[in-house]
Image (tube, rainbow, N blue to C red; front, side, top):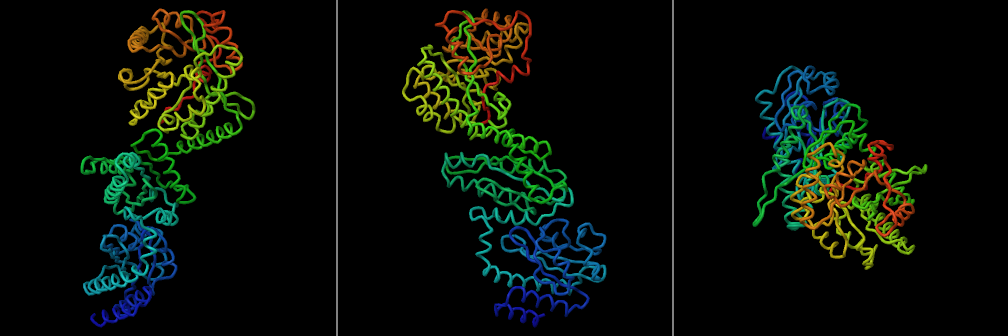
Amino acid sequence: MLKFKAEILEHIAKGEPLSVVADHICRSVEERFPDIVCSILTVDASGLLHPLSAPSLPPDFSGLLDNIAAGPQVGSCGTAAYTRRNVEVRDIASDPRWIGYAEPVLAGGLVACWSSPLLDVSGSVIATFALYFRQSRGPRRAERDLVKLCMHLCDLALARASRVQDRERRASIDALTGLPNRSSFEHALAHLGCSRPGIWAIFLIDLDNLKMTNDTFGHAAGDRLLQEASARMGQLAAPDRIFRTGGDEFAIVVMAPDRLARVSVLGEEIHEALRQPIEFASFSISPKATIGCAIVSGDEDSAYAVYRNADIALYHAKDTHPGGFICFRSELDSSIVARLSSIDAVKSALDEGRIEAWYQPFVELAGGKIIGFEALCRMTTPEGEIVTASSFSEATTDARIASTITRQMLRQVASDMKRWRNLGIPLSPISINITTVDLQGGKLLELIDQTFGDDKELLSNLCLEVTEGAYLDKRAHLMIDVIHELRRRGIRIALDDFGTGYASLTHLLNLPIDIIKIDRSFVERLPADELSATIISAIISIAGKIGASVTAEGVETVEQAALLTELECFACQGYLYAPARPQAEAAQLALRHSISGDHPIPIVRTHGVTCEPSRAARHRDDNAFAVKRS
């Protein structure tokens, strides 16, 4: 063996190509043991196998393994590369790890295989060394000793070759975390097969608090967060491979059968691995993540389709269950298609000027006079149909769409208020729904200034409605600062849908508000439900003590209006008085039925009779534009 070692070292020292050195090793082994066939495969940063030398194996078998991802059912070598352990198969024909790979080997008279993984100093598998046998057996002692020497020589040859290829390798590795990067992920994805259901899965992981960490503690803390989170996930994922695919995005290609059988368990294990705080000098941070997953169904035309499904699951998790885990199911795809279609429709409507404000009046309960309006978003379809915001609510979950609609609504309301004033119609307060996105974006004050200027009369008649959900956001204190600044400009703030949040009374202690809008879910139970009446009475009492007025939403019957008046509710809105109307009709209503007009607004329903439109239509028409997604 000393002569053999000296010969191979001489080839390495001469700088011969890696493939030539590998061929010398394989042929020398086969000369020493004529009944054995030898092969060497390399494993790249993406986890893909590449035949390096197999001079006596059937060529079609080597071609079958090229660019195949290592996994627990990819022959002896693919399994050894995946598990990082020796794999001994004494009967290739019956071993499940050889399904799909056995035929050319068996045709060549080879019935058994022993494969050993070669690891670098970091513990990553960089190659496999395999012996194929013509009898059903494993390696004998002399063969094991020779393989041990060969692997040492392969390590030397690969180390020399890796120095030459270091630039290419660095291009596939993320410098900050040391993980394979997006290029590696896409390379691996391109070589994953989808013909066998359940054979692999993709986990997509988004770190939820990286931006907050960067903004609050600086990018050094953010980098530490990424490094620690990636190290924890990488340790947990092994032997499966994890990739850093974006700034705060990671992907795991899962092949372990036990994990594939219970993907939700792996999702919980990832969350558990991230929960332990990262300690800094004067603070600590707990990494948090949202996870989407998709498993090969066998119906996909490419691995990219599985990735797309995982991305849909991740998107749905971020939208409905931040910090959670969702595995893809077919109905999620339908909802995403519907959302994208809705976004496209609203984008076109915005571009073509088909989004406008309609106005529903607020009515003083005691006198029946109009005291203001709520501006509700309406879209005209290309066919001329007027549709409410609820019909395109999927689009308004998109932050850019939501912000654009808010800008459009503010501009139209400002224009309409000026038009009414020029026509001699006394100004009435007009409220507009704004979103968490608007409050967090940092541009709402600038937008208000651009739209209304320093027109104090307009500003004093503007009311912005904010849902309780906005105050449940982790950055609520920042939004409250914006609201204080809005009020300093003379703008009133209404708390919309009051009673539907999780800490309603706590909100009243801390929020700078002028109006409380009681949610329709309380009003619709009146007068039969005494508990609803008691709750409404308590809200009215508390509002009086904090200097806020109360408006009841969704008033539809005379009985409801009468009881609300008895409870000393100040104002209401609903179909009992009027649905939303275009601005010209709303102007006429203001002229005839406002506090400065001649007559109270007439009730449009007969006592005790439920009229058209139907309940479903009523909810569509009364549904104001209000994005509750942070």
